[in-house]
Length: 68
Image (cartoon, rainbow, N blue to C red; front, side, top):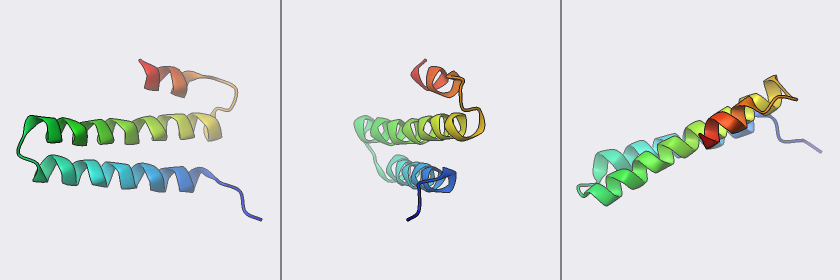
Protein backbone atom coordinates (compact mmCIF):
# COMPACT_ATOMS: atom_id res chain seq x y z
CA UNK A 1 0.00 0.00 0.00
CA UNK A 2 1.50 3.29 -1.06
CA UNK A 3 0.96 6.61 0.68
CA UNK A 4 0.59 9.98 -0.93
CA UNK A 5 3.87 11.87 -0.86
CA UNK A 6 5.28 15.19 -1.97
CA UNK A 7 5.70 14.19 -5.65
CA UNK A 8 1.98 13.52 -5.93
CA UNK A 9 1.15 17.02 -4.75
CA UNK A 10 3.77 18.51 -7.08
CA UNK A 11 2.22 16.68 -10.04
CA UNK A 12 -1.21 18.06 -9.15
CA UNK A 13 0.27 21.56 -8.83
CA UNK A 14 2.04 21.24 -12.18
CA UNK A 15 -1.15 20.06 -13.85
CA UNK A 16 -3.11 22.99 -12.41
CA UNK A 17 -0.40 25.40 -13.51
CA UNK A 18 -0.35 23.97 -17.04
CA UNK A 19 -4.14 24.15 -17.34
CA UNK A 20 -4.06 27.73 -16.08
CA UNK A 21 -1.41 28.72 -18.61
CA UNK A 22 -3.36 27.13 -21.46
CA UNK A 23 -6.47 28.96 -20.31
CA UNK A 24 -4.70 32.33 -20.10
CA UNK A 25 -3.14 31.93 -23.54
CA UNK A 26 -6.24 30.68 -25.37
CA UNK A 27 -9.03 32.85 -23.92
CA UNK A 28 -9.91 36.22 -25.34
CA UNK A 29 -12.28 37.64 -22.75
CA UNK A 30 -11.27 38.92 -19.33
CA UNK A 31 -13.34 36.40 -17.35
CA UNK A 32 -11.61 33.44 -19.02
CA UNK A 33 -8.17 34.93 -18.47
CA UNK A 34 -8.96 35.59 -14.81
CA UNK A 35 -10.12 31.97 -14.43
CA UNK A 36 -6.74 30.86 -15.78
CA UNK A 37 -4.92 33.15 -13.37
CA UNK A 38 -6.98 31.67 -10.55
CA UNK A 39 -5.85 28.18 -11.55
CA UNK A 40 -2.22 29.32 -11.53
CA UNK A 41 -2.61 30.82 -8.06
CA UNK A 42 -4.28 27.63 -6.81
CA UNK A 43 -1.33 25.62 -8.13
CA UNK A 44 1.03 27.84 -6.15
CA UNK A 45 -1.11 27.39 -3.02
CA UNK A 46 -1.04 23.60 -3.39
CA UNK A 47 2.75 23.74 -3.58
CA UNK A 48 3.03 26.05 -0.54
CA UNK A 49 0.89 23.78 1.62
CA UNK A 50 2.56 20.57 0.39
CA UNK A 51 6.09 21.85 0.98
CA UNK A 52 5.06 23.13 4.39
CA UNK A 53 3.60 19.75 5.34
CA UNK A 54 6.52 17.65 4.16
CA UNK A 55 9.48 19.96 4.90
CA UNK A 56 8.52 21.95 8.01
CA UNK A 57 5.88 19.78 9.63
CA UNK A 58 4.79 21.63 12.78
CA UNK A 59 4.75 25.16 11.49
CA UNK A 60 1.81 26.73 9.68
CA UNK A 61 3.76 29.09 7.45
CA UNK A 62 2.64 27.50 4.16
CA UNK A 63 -1.02 27.62 5.11
CA UNK A 64 -0.79 31.21 6.35
CA UNK A 65 1.04 32.31 3.21
CA UNK A 66 -1.54 30.69 0.94
CA UNK A 67 -4.44 32.31 2.81
CA UNK A 68 -2.99 35.83 2.74
